[in-house]
View 1 (cartoon, rainbow, N blue to C red):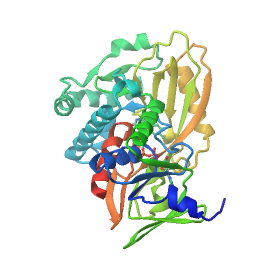
View 2 (tube, protein in one colour):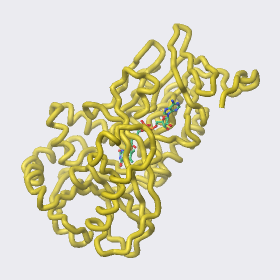
View 3 (cartoon, rainbow, N blue to C red):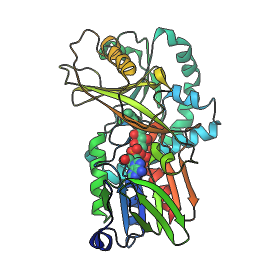
View 4 (spheres, helix red, strand yellow):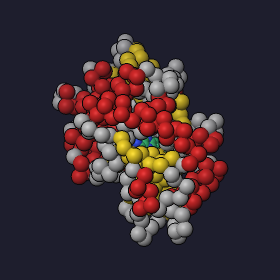
Length: 378
Ligand SMILES: Cc1cc2nc3c(=O)[nH]c(=O)nc-3n(C[C@H](O)[C@H](O)[C@H](O)COP(=O)(O)OP(=O)(O)OC[C@H]3O[C@@H](n4cnc5c(N)ncnc54)[C@H](O)[C@@H]3O)c2cc1C
């Protein structure tokens, strides 16, 4: 729909914006709230193209994960140990800030632990995890304050009822949140702080002039604001093509409630390529991007039948074998990835700062990334 702004729209709704935050995911909302905390007089607007935030923050699995063992070992193949531990620390700090900002009850934070599952074919990688466990426990214990973050809990496998799973490593410090309630709480906090939130605000182009930033909308009109923080994660290249952010789609399913469900906690399967958890007596299961990597390098929300078939198979053969489990619904979400698992928080021009590329870490690290972006912009 193309239209020009009316005098009334221009002089009331869109008047007097000091900072425009683009994107109302975890990062955009955390940034907007932090800007108001740092300077309550600042007039902050969040510009979001969806009716709700539509990227990753309302579509994820809600794991407050800060590093499972195979993930950290994989990170160590292309990052230094200091960098890997630095990211773990940021994820842990981000999680504490999120919990302090929202309160555990509002986001249904539950410290149920996170489990890594290994089949008999994965004995090699399991042994590698065992070798590194004392070292990881010492180093990550210093960050989290937990004396024994990782431990082997094979004895729990029968109670969960899994098939084909031979080994289980528990991350005692991992928790889970209710993704919808988390985002509802952040939106309410932003409004309470005096942030104006505009939905349906689809931005096509940004132009930084010395007098401010021109924000051109797909509706055909342009708004000029003094400062902009871009928090659009996997969609970053649409606005700033030079940024090294790869959109990556993920498929997710949720079952109907399963009577007598024994699964409790967050679970990482096949080196974390699949993940599942319990929620409201159901199983939420997602991932499988590695099965069709090229197709999933996209920011469109379509279904991938091949991956959905693999997820359905995993549900019935490994997670809930022999149980009458029905799928309630499916959805997709878009991640923002890079060559290394590190967010980009950077000033890209005099009046534009970006806080993007959260990978699969946004639940834990997102609040910190938003807050750091806000501080850089001021
Ligand atoms: C299926 C799935 C499962 C995940 N599971 C987990 C998990 O369990 N734990 C975890 O830590 N992380 C998980 N993640 C990752 C996590 O959700 C993200 O890292 C985090 O939500 C990113 O937040 P964000 O605010 O940066 O981006 P987003 O939530 O993607 O927000 C970006 C916003 O920008 C808006 N936008 C984009 N372009 C424009 C434009 N041109 N104009 C205006 N607005 C625009 C979008 O509509 C969107 O609302 C998962 C992600 C997915 C997709």
